[in-house]
Length: 536
Ligand code: TEU
Ligand code: CA
Image (cartoon, rainbow, N blue to C red; front, side, top):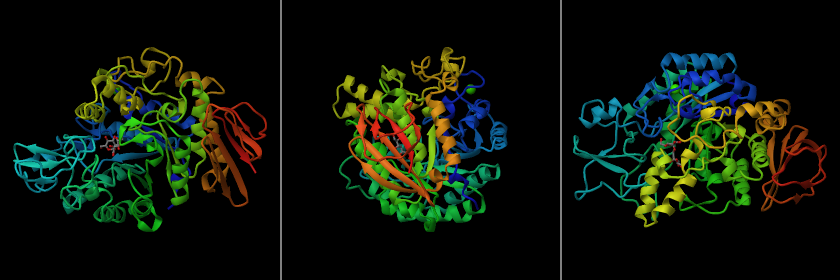
């Protein structure tokens, strides 16, 4: 089977904040269909659709109550079929989010499981109280204990995420069969694969007390366990291998050996994995505490995975991160330059680039003013935890507002109309207040816009095979500079980026192919946040 997913540029859509077709304030599937030409024009070849399944939306769809149906918020099954068809017409493939670690507590499986009704009785992880309290000392990844007592069943159930997201029991073969059926259901409808949510925590090898000192207690028993790998092999062999499709797994906190197990060709588990090291270099203990961003560390992590794995997804944003131009670039003085610098990295490193909606127009963090503007369950739980740790309210609030996932979930900025052309109704999540300055419409027109720079880069990937098929070689990493070579057959391209407000000099030379500044040749001098592509 051909590996189209290696050539194409992927684009993640977070449905609720992409485009609202019926003006109820929430983005929806018909809204996505309306924007397919925009995506086609950008050069997108794959869409990763965050969950649109039936869900009480406690975690914006990552709490699924029916995997075989669409939430009325987003549309109907027919709308989904139409989306697959309309995208197909434009040669755009769609992958869906496969949330397999947990379901919603409203899922019928869980409802029956609570009542002890077969065959659902052991679909989840139920344990008796220990000494009148929690079965063990594990933390939820969303903070607080990982167990919740159920009055009906008179037992605790495990939830690694929110309490409304009970973990499925992957020791039960019936659960694995259910997952296979869900996969087949969507593959048969014409999707091109899955982004597998939290794919390295699904199998719990023991329920002993954790000896982990800091947060995320329990991880030694659930991160990338041998049983986890066996399940993925089974899904691949029994389902995925029968379709022309691919998978990308979300796998935080993996070392290189584990990464190879997940996505080496011979391992037969996943096609690639999202690792997060490059985005975590300036986190301290928990994601809410951030140190100053050091480009050198960021480049080193990127380079590490480039050298280590045969194929990576390249990404700087997704629905769980803050905006990259704010986080890794400079959204004030060098907003345009640094967005384009990041775009250059995104589209010239080796792997499949994943653009997150709005990244291509340089959308920034939301500039939230108070906790009342936050919807995200992880952020709200995080606030409670920081307060528990003794942080004063103003400080806890400040940390949360800056690092909340809601920063990248604000409505897409289509134009400068009221509500940014996203909807005619006030959306529940605050709109970023810079939409009059930063929006797609104005950037479609402006020749030198960030959006048009993305188009140029994506175009370049189509004419320069080297950018898709070439090997990666690190040439130089300093506190501010990253230079690397991509080489395929007898051709090679050199990419150099400057991630600082200061001018830099480098001794590498070559014929200029593209720069984010207006220049005709390159003599080794880089302007602030400049990125250049050179031909050797
Ligand atoms: O995220 C998994 C995960 O580990 C997150 O906790 C991540 O580390 C965190 O959000 C970073 O801030 C996936 C989804 O991407 C996320 O949106 C869901 O909330 C989560 O699973 C539960 O399904
Ligand atoms: Ca809507």
